[in-house]
Image (cartoon, rainbow, N blue to C red; front, side):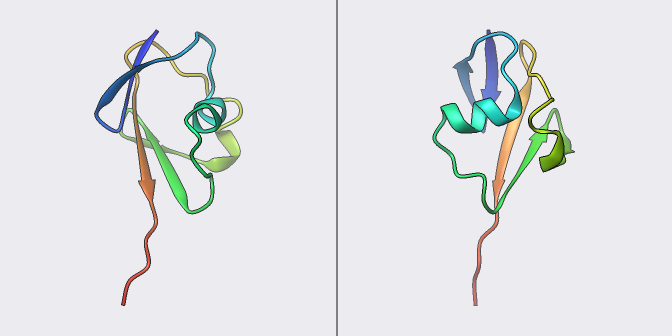
Length: 66
């Protein structure tokens, strides 16, 4: 099925969770936040939040600056 990840359409398997998506995309889970359809998903919920066709996922990375 198709979902949008950071403005790019990608194909994933049905029943893929947020946590699985992060692992499959080789993204470190440290220092990031996930927004699913404009709602921030708690890291505690990544494992049980299944993605659906046409979902919009945005990965927000914390940065440090000075």
